[in-house]
Structures are given as C-alpha cells and as structure tokens.
Image 1: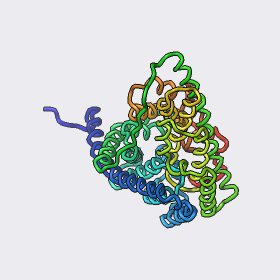
Image 2 (image 1 turned 45 degrees about the vertical axis):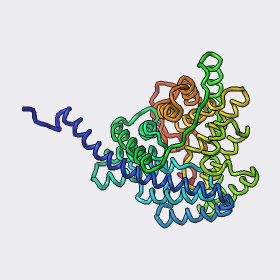
Image 3 (image 1 turned 90 degrees about the horizontal axis):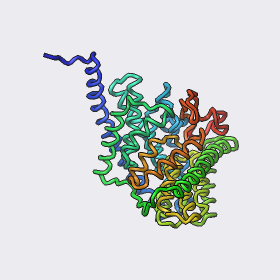
Image 4 (image 1 turned 90 degrees about the vertical axis):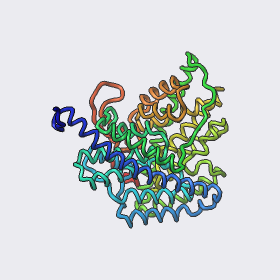
Length: 432
C-alpha cells in the first residue's frame, strides 16, 4: 500500500499545498479583519471631512501628529511601500510598527483632507502582518517572503474588493518581468478570504457603471491608442511631479516635522485656490463625477499637484486611488474633447494610468475586468499595452525592480531609480 512521503515530487507538492493553505487562511482572516476595520475607519473620517471641510485647517497639526506617532513607534526611517517591496527580493526587514503607524497616519491624513488613497497603506499593513505571522510560525526567510506577499494580497483585496487583481498584484509589482509563482496559491487563497471577510462585515467595494460600449473597430482602435499614448505621458508626468516634489521638500525642509507642516499649509492654500474639496481625499467622488460626464478639463492636473504635495510631505495613505482618479479625469476630458462615451474613456484612462505608474499589465487587465466587466475588454487590452510600453521605467515605487527590458528580450535587473533622475537615491524622501 502506498504511503505518503513528502520527499517525493508528489509529496512535496502536497506538503506545500496543505502548508500554505493553512497559513493563507490565517493570514487572510487577519488581514481581512484588519483591512475591514481600516476601510470602515477611512470611510468614516472621509465622510466627516466632507461634511466638515473646515477640518482642513488642522492638516498641519495632523501632520505633526503623524510624525509623532511614527517617532513613538520608532518608525522614523520607515520607507513605506518601498520597504515592503524590497523585503521580497532582499533582506530588508518589515518592522512591527509599520501596520499601526500607517493605520493611524492614514486616518489623520484623511480626516483633514490630505490627498491620498488607502490601498498603499493596505499593502504596508498586509506586508507587516504577513511578516509577523511568518515569524510567529517560524517560517524560514524564503517562506516569510511568501507570507509578506500573501498579506499584501489579503489586505488589498479586503479594501478594494477585487481579489483576483489583488492576488496577482502582490506577485507582479515586485520585479517587473518575473512573477513569484511560489506565492500563487497563498496569495489567491488569502485574497479571496480577505475580500469575503470584508464583504461579510459590510465593507463593499466601489461600483462604477461604464455605460455604452461601442463596437471595437478601426476608428475606435485608433482613438484608444491615442488615449493610451497621452495617458503614458500623464503617468510619466505624475511620477516626475511626485518624486520631484519629494526632492524639493527635502532640499528646502530637511526636518520631517517642518516638511509635513509646510505640506499641510500648501494643501490648505491649494484648496482655497480651487474653492472646492474635489481634489482632497482619495478622489472616489471625483471618479464618480467622471462616469457621469461632469469634470473640469484641468482636474487631472490639480489631482496630480494635490497628491504630490500631500504624500511627499510625509502624509500617509497611498497613491493608487489618486492614480485611478487622475486616469478617470483625463479619460473623461478626452471623451469630452472627442465626443466619445465618457464612461468607456474614463475606465480606460484609469487602467492606462494604473499600468503606467505600477508597470503591472496583468494586474491592470484583471482589475479592469473585475471593476467594469468584459464588454470593453478589447479597449482595455490595447490601452494597457500602449501605456505600459510608452511609460518607460517610471514608477510610483523607486524600489521596484525591472528584471527584463520593456522593449527588448534583454535581462537588465535594475531598479527604477537607476533610470529616472528624480528617483535616484541622492536624497531621503518621506517614503524613501
């Protein structure tokens, strides 16, 4: 009679599957619960800001509180999402205080109207939780890296409600050109469980109606290529402004406390100049306006500026939803100028900007299908390919590694900051 032997190929596979099924359930449950609590808290503070916009006057104070929280938790040198990314391909340690620090910091940012998202914070919290669970289970160094990716997927899925995209994103964003398939089962299990926990506890993802989708043909194909080219340029602009702002902040305000206080004052000034709060917060409300066909032509530029001023000063949250907002507003502007369906162009712009700044084409396509369905798939495939190729080696994350070239079958194995001047490590930014 056959006896189970984990040293055989089949035995090793079964051992891996059982082991990571159990671990991913634990990580999925924990990240799902934490992500859900975080999501509800962000929704509450964001709603409070919208009904009490005068709280923006306290943004500099909130900034100083964030600095104090990070100092108290000994996270002064915390490098945010870059630290989580580096932990996968290097020996960088994700500190224990990352999760509570970014949790509190993001809430303080949103309650006073800072322009930031929440999914970047989810990646940091999930990575930190996965790392701590891995250490508690006494996993080896290689398995802890899988646990980190597993945690990232669970927390991201809980907040965004797109489990397939969340599972793949954690494996794709680390090293462009290489997928960490050893984490496939753990990330998928954790992602779906995290999303299920969030849904069960009443945290529902945002839903957008794409509206009419015209038949894909030569004319529409040319238009979507043009939009993809323009979105690639906007993605590059966003990264340049983002990292350039960080460079200027550090150059003129070396003190983190002074930097974040000045950043808070600048956001207040920008809000007074625009005379509305459309560009504060994550931008979800602005995305909704895009799908209704109501957006200012310069909205994408304002959102770029608000986000760069906020995040590079040291406020917390993330860049992902602001990125989607920039894409939606630019896509809607393109629709208004060309007379095309605003829902389709806004959705296409969201995906083009996302892939342009994250360099994750597979994740982006899955995100589009989960958010908007399959009816516009030809448009999504084309614009994702165009924007990914033409956006070059710009990235939201300076620690992101390009293992293979975007334009040649060539092994390059270089970080983003090896290509882009503003992303070179000749200064220390809040997230660096």
